[in-house]
Structure formats: structure tokens, C-alpha cells
Image 1 (cartoon, one colour):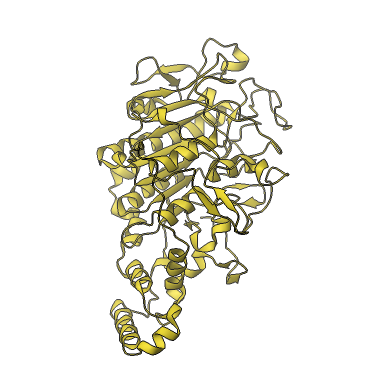
Image 2 (tube, rainbow, N blue to C red):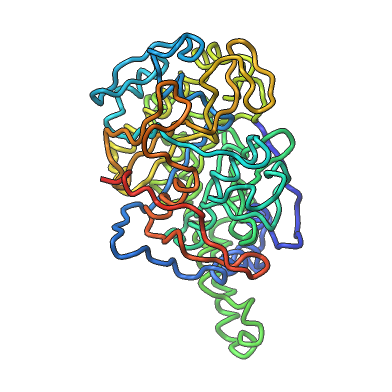
Length: 481
């Protein structure tokens, strides 16, 4: 189990969500969690409605992010008629959608393709550094990194960063009841020593940061953050709560004088979050049958997706499941970053896990009716070079390795009114460039906002009180039925 501790305490931009949610260390007469909720509400303008012609169907979003850049040509977009040094070792297989083939490494997803849209025309041309961090920043925030920093964003997270879309969504559409608005697991995205760039609330403030699990869902999960201290019983906690209500109710003048510390609806939310057990239960995979856990796959990625389904059922607004790797890591163990070795890791490690987990998740969500109002997006920061053994980003590649390739790659989208059994866009004969309906990552982010009824053109104020659009892109309406 990996744990990356954050710096405790208060920073110049406020308390982090994780610090304020260490409920085991809270006293009810302290104000940390309620203050957090009140801070969120003060910074939470009503969600702007999308134009009348838009009929949003999504209520929740699951972002499945395959960190490192999975090879589109070896997974989703095979080219059997291309030369050997392009088509690679894998053969195509038919799917449940007529005329659509995928790689032989994805037999279970081949059967589930009638439930999803396969996008084969994701594309952008990088400006600035040609790296993972820049690409991930763009996909998470909807802003091209060169518009933010001349370096292309190989930099640590900053309070001036553009917010992750999940932070905006959690702020504008807070969940009903006592649930966390945005959960990221099992850990933040990372390239080298840069951790979590573009994955936090940035200029919105730390109150809107995601709740990060920092644990392996395939192992025993502990949730002190959402639990009472052992010596504080639920009854004792309730008694303190009632006492505080009585004190505030009998001290109207004092309450007015210190209104920011008075008992408000934010105490109620904090109280419910701790005592209802709803959030804790959503993280408890022991409540699932063994057969269901096996269907998703008994590994970190599979169990993360199962946990994501439970969080969606419980009411979390945005869940992000990251492939548990580090960009520029070892492809023989975790990373999709297959410079040194492409076919062995895909065949023996990556694709079997992805195939079982993603197909299990899609089928389970569909069977439970959750796809009706949940948008699911599965993608990476870019694809891999169609030609083997070449350098496209300055990296060294083995003869069977593939380098970074943002000019054309694939994504899988499902739910919330998107088309079922549909291919959106197409690539050319070598999967090098879109031949039809090119879809920029910022347009995909705009589409996510659109699906929720949030107008992606609306403006928010950054840390300097300057107006900035939520996202640069335009929704791809052709993805919807």
C-alpha cells in the first residue's frame, strides 16, 4: 500500500480538504469540517445552465485515466493492412458492433462494445514541452498548458493552476446528502517528482480539492478520515452536537457577533458526513460478493473501478480512477509508457487487467441502470507512435517500443445519453492522424461539462480576480444520441 503524506496544517491558500477531514482528530466544538463546507458554499455560485437546446442527462461522472499513454493501435484501433513495423504483433478481432474491430488483447471489451462509443480521433498538437505532465494538465483542466506556462507545465502544482474539472463540477453541483463531491483514487497522477499537477482545485482554493484515497482498494482500506475517534462514541458525538445547538440557540446576540462561527447548515452537513456512514460504506468493498470482485479483477485497477461504482451509487458527483502507475515508470510492472517494451507488457499485464476491469465496470453500471445518468470516460494523455522504434518526443525507444503520439489516439465513452455501439471519428490508414471528426482533449472536457448541464463557456474568476472560461473547448454534440 502506497501512502504519500501531505504537508499538514494551514498553507497560504487555506486548509487542504484532507487535513480538514481528519475527523478522528476533530472536536465537535472545533470548526474545521464545517468551516470547510461553509467555505465551499461561499465560493459556490449556482451552476450556470447550458443553452436551452442542450438536454443534459448526466448527474455524475467517472473519469478512468490510463496514465502513461496507452497504445491506441495495439488496443482500440488495429490496422491489419499496415506494414509490419506499424501494425505490430497483435491481430484484430470482431466486436459486438458490426464493422468495428479491436485488438485480440481485449476479448471481453469486444463483447461490451455495443454499450459504448469508441472514439478513434482524439488529437492535438503539443506546444511547449512534449511530456506527460503537460498532456495530463490539459486533459484534467481543459486548458492547453502553453496558455498557462511557457515551460509546458513540467512544474509542481500551484495555487494559480487552472482547477481540475471535477473541482468545478463538485463546486457547482454539490452532491445531495452526506457524500463527498469528488474522489480520486488510488493516488494522484505523477511524472517523475511532479505529483498531482492539474489534479487539484488550483485558484478555486484547497476547500475544493478532491478527496484522495491514497490506498490500494485491493488491500484492506482504513478510513480514519471519515470516522470518529475510538473513544468518542456516536451517542457522545450526538450529545455534543445537541449541546452546541443549544448554546448557539440561547446566545442570539453572540451568534450575530461571530456569525462565521455560529451553528449553521454546514455543521449539519459535517455531522451527517461523519455519522451517516454513507461515505464509509461506499469505500467498503467487503460488502461486495466475491464473484463481483472477481469479475472486476483482484488488482488495484479493478477494485478501484468497483469502488467507483459504489461511490456513484452513494451519490459522489465526480470519481476519477487513475491507472496505478508513474509516467516514465517501468512498463514491465505498471506504466503504459512503453518506450522500452510494448508488446509483452500489453499482452501479459496491461490489457488483461484493463479488459476485465473496464468491461466488468461497463456491464455492471449498465445492469444497475447507472449508465442512464452517469457519464463514463476512459482515456489517456496521448497514444503511442504508429511506427515502432522511432523517437517522436526525444525519448529513446527499443525496436519494439512506441513513443508518445498525441496526434491521434482513442477514448471510450459511455452513458448519460451518449451513443451506444457507435464509432465516433476515424483515423487514417496508419492511425497517425484523424481522418474524420478530430476531437481535441479540451473539447472532450467541454463535452463533460455539457453533459451535466454546465455551460462550458461561462467564466469564473481566477486568483487575480480575472475572468477565465471554464474550458477552451466546444462540446462534441455528435457523441450524443
